[in-house]
Image 1 (cartoon, rainbow, N blue to C red):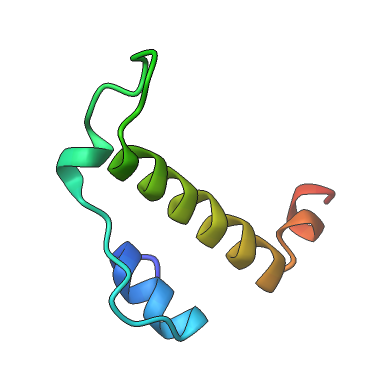
Image 2 (image 1 turned 90 degrees about the vertical axis):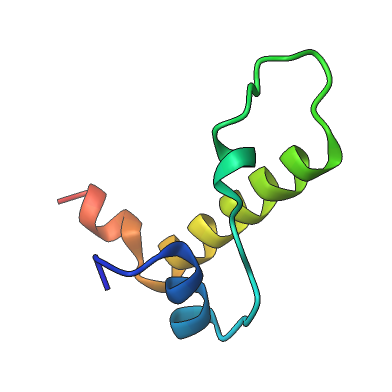
Amino acid sequence: MSRCSFEEVVEECMGYQGVRLDRGISMSDCSVYELDHEQILQASVDAYVCFELGVWVRLWEFLNR
């Protein structure tokens, strides 16, 4: 799955359909004092998915080798 998009990984591994990352939001300025709703939502979804996939593949076992 290394060549799959974020959306494909989420659908295949987690079973969630319709999860999308917007490139414009991903590349927006996150150093501003107040983030807008879309920036917060996208960052939250990205962090949650990465955490869940890390748990799913037991990523910590690879890091402790």
